[in-house]
Length: 298
Image 1 (tube, one colour):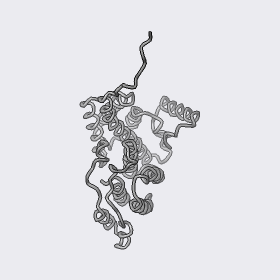
Image 2 (cartoon, rainbow, N blue to C red):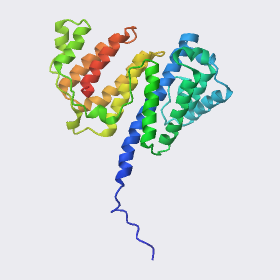
Image 3 (spheres, one colour):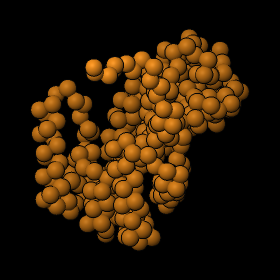
C-alpha cells in the first residue's frame, strides 16, 4: 500500500522564513550597488567620449557577443520587460569589473588603485552568485557585503549606505508639517506657496494601512533608492528615467495614503518635476527628500 501523500499538516520551517527575510535585504543592496556601478561607468564614459561611448571604450568581442545574444533573446521573448536603454544593462557585475579594468585610464582618478575596486567587485560577484541561487549568506558574509558596498559608496562620495527593509517601514520619526514647510522655505518659496503645499499634511504611517505588505514597501523603497542614485549620478537622460520611475512610484503609493497626503504628494511632484534637468542638483535632492518624507515618514 502506497504511503498517504498528505501535506496539509506540513509546517513551513521558521528558519527558512527568517533567512528569506535576511536574503531580501542582501538582494536589495546588491541590486542597488550593481545598477549604481552601471550608472557610474556610463557617466564617466560619457564625460570622456560622449553619448556614443559604447563604441569607443574597450569592451572585447566576448562581451559584445553576450550583449547581442541577450538583446536577441529579449526580442524573442516579448513578454519580458527590457533590461534598460544602455548596453551596460545587458552584462553582468563581473563584466562591469572587466570594463573598469580594461579602461583604467578613464577610471583611475576615482579609486586608490585598480586592484582596490576590482577585488571588491569580485567579492561582490561571489556573494551575488549565492544570493541569485537562493543560497544563504551567513553573518560573516552579510557583514562583508555591507562593508564592501559601503566602502565603494564612500570612495565615490555617494551619501548612501546599505539599508535593511525594516529601516524603511519601522521608523518612528514621521514628518511634521512644520519640518516639511522648513524645507520649502529653504528653497525660497513664498509663505503662500508653502502654505498650499503643507495644507492638511498629516503624519504618514504605512504600518496601520490595511493595504500594506512587505513586498509592496520593498518595491516602493527600491524605487526611491533608484531615483536618489539617478539624481546623485545624473547619467545620460537621467531626467526621463527619473520621471518614469516617479510615475511608477506614485502608482504604488497612492492606494496607501489618504486624500490630503495624495494632494501634498502631487503638488510636491509637480515642483520636483519642474527642476528636473535644470542642473540644480541640490534643489532636486532637497525636493526629493521632501517627497521621501511624505511617503515613508523619514
